Image (cartoon, rainbow, N blue to C red; front, top):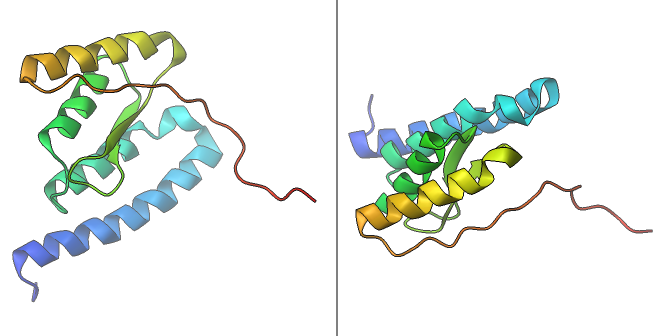
Length: 127
């Protein structure tokens, strides 16, 4: 309550984002990736509203992905541009990609660069 409003929102983002990371790790372990959608969305909303580092293109990408059936989506990177990620069932990948392209065109944005990735094992030691 003693902080200026803007700084208070920034602090709230950092504190709640740290908790979301812990909650995401636990949820992944207990329920798997299909259960983290709401955490991804909450993260994006916090970056957009509290930290104020999103841009209209990223918000459009997240909204388009969700409207096309993504499990969850959020911006990633340093903010003020960058990229959005979407967790998508394999059968919906093309639908989500098409929705993003359509939404960007409708908003007058340049066509997004979209690519798919698959999960893999993390870094490890070879020896």
